[in-house]
Image 1 (cartoon, rainbow, N blue to C red):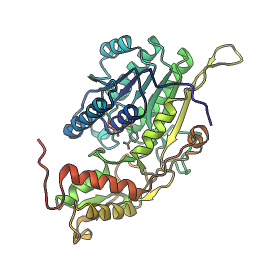
Image 2: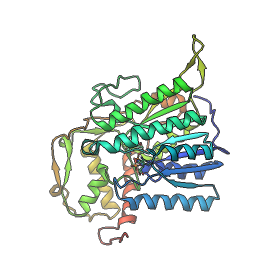
Image 3: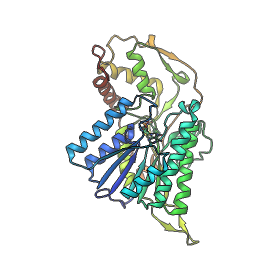
Image 4: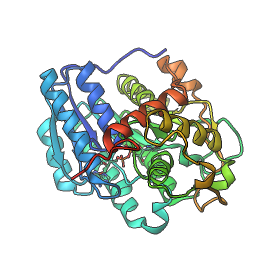
Length: 364
Ligand SMILES: NC(=O)c1ccc[n+]([C@@H]2O[C@H](COP(=O)([O-])OP(=O)(O)OC[C@H]3O[C@@H](n4cnc5c(N)ncnc54)[C@H](O)[C@@H]3O)[C@@H](O)[C@H]2O)c1
């Protein structure tokens, strides 16, 4: 196991994408378990999905900061706005930066490429530049399992060649890793990229399949199960992702010089995934059971009448499966939340947020 070489207590930490699904959970974990001198969350609150969920998440962070008496500052800003990013770094002198802000989603990138170039490429470049001019102890950033494209070899290892992205989203995430490598080499910036595998959980992303399925089933609509349900996904519960991120934050790749006397890039990439791919149809079955248990759907719901098996969609990949041996060896941790436990938490949250089969929570 690697020793901790980054102390979070007493340090200024920036989390971008703080109103997002993973970012919000990370901020809450940091507020609960650490005492950063400054915890700054940045987000532009894009309307890619229902912004009410983003505002709710921010309210939760705010309430936790108040309850724990910890420092918390939210900045509504766009990563693509270089002047604002630069001034934020000059003001706070961040020791640790976690870049989670991005335009996510594979399918959306097929019809809306511009958002990906702005947020994921220009935005990430601005973060790298700010880290170059304001020395940071560690830059951690979100990559994605999508960089593996349609790789046949499973489980996916960070040693695998990942030069064949099948979506622009994946191409931007792989680009982030390449850009980070260059900046680590040129400017000796310790950076760690994290390839997340299909993250789910309470207050998750409404654009993701499990959430969309739930909305549709509750509305009595038919859900479409792609690739005739034969897709396999390494579904990873959000608490496991956050645990992995926090552990990784506390060990920056060491700065070392090579034989030529020049710095070797202090650069690492890890997978964070459940290491236990589930068949999409099995996933849907557990989801159904948990939605009934949480009373989101009635016990006599006719699931078969609301399911359609359809072919694969452009940009989709048939399987994702994380090799997490490097994460385990270096950080003594691998995601392990069983799907049923995670989906139970999602279903219970959904019932509280949107109401059960018999009650409807009115959102304004
Ligand atoms: N959730 C997953 O399954 C998953 C899987 C692999 C990788 N990832 C990556 O993890 C990160 C977090 O994902 P998430 O699921 O929390 O997504 P999310 O969409 O919930 O959160 C991302 C946040 O970034 C913000 N954002 C987007 N563009 C911005 C910009 N230009 N400036 C400032 N803020 C901006 C959005 O408003 C959003 O709140 C992303 O980088 C995503 O690509 C997520």
